[in-house]
Length: 419
Image 1 (cartoon, rainbow, N blue to C red):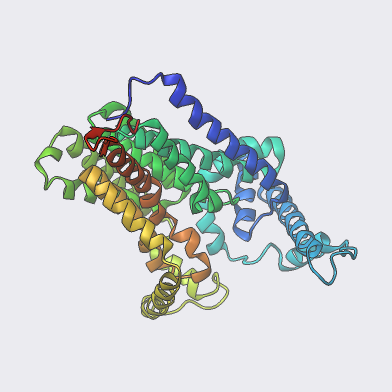
Image 2 (cartoon, rainbow, N blue to C red; image 1 turned 45 degrees about the vertical axis):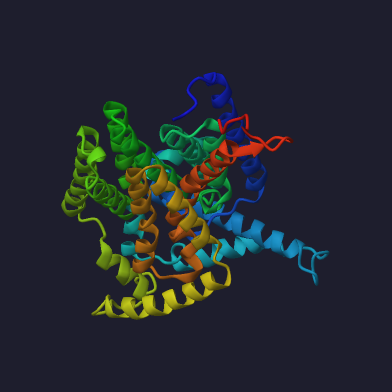
């Protein structure tokens, strides 16, 4: 069990200091912030939430996008061996603006493509306050960084709730910041909020399993609601995965109690509600997402069969992915070690983390894009962030509990603990 006898100030201080250090590092990194094509669209929606017309929001977000592109080119130029000491062409940002305006907007310009982002207001809503204070690019970036900061704190709380001493729970928080959650989560995209909210669903579900029903249900439902508004498909998978994990956990008698049943029911209800809202609002679904892929963002005509090429592409993708993992299998090794520790610690928690982690490969099945798999496969790292600290704690506890021989040859027990 957790070392509850320790002063609360001590174990609360360290997570706060780690989070502060992480955020200060992001302020340094944020001096080179630039916006991607998707960031431009999130910026446009954010500015509309703040009261701009669509045309005004597009113009301001486009200016931020082009300024960021110019800054990125300057950074690349400054370290180029052949031209770093030459003057950067001054018209980079203006050229970007002129090219976009010639197209009528930043390509792709299809209304169907814009609709995909219009149905994701969660991240723009979160980013609106900081965007109003610091502008589009910095507002989006700082929002993502703060959400990533929160995700690490939630990882700490989840490990504490699972009975880990604060020192080892702190390792999980640090792991969250230094794995792809920290890297990808800080992009001016919806990944930062998404990963933090998924961690929130895990924490809420675990609290329910541990019979903290009111608090757990509140955190779970709030995380799911905001998650569906941020990235509908990811949280539909997450809700289904957590419900399925709860059902599997019921195979063990000690999991058959009110908290587990209610956790399953809440997650199933969230998934059902999401599907109902999607149908009622006619949100873009899987078929539309695949059409977007095969038509180069709706520039080319729709294809008649979206599934056959997906199967072929998956065969190619997973072949290449397996080769890359064989070359450097650190993710597979860490994930396997983390899963072993999770299931040894608590079977129900093991199934829950496994279910959520599996949403990463499931997402890749729908979007087998090699240069995006660090972002799309990121949920697999939940096994590492939550499992490895438990593994380290088990190893440390076993080491300190082993008997040691004194100089006379008699066995004595080592003094010390893992707490």
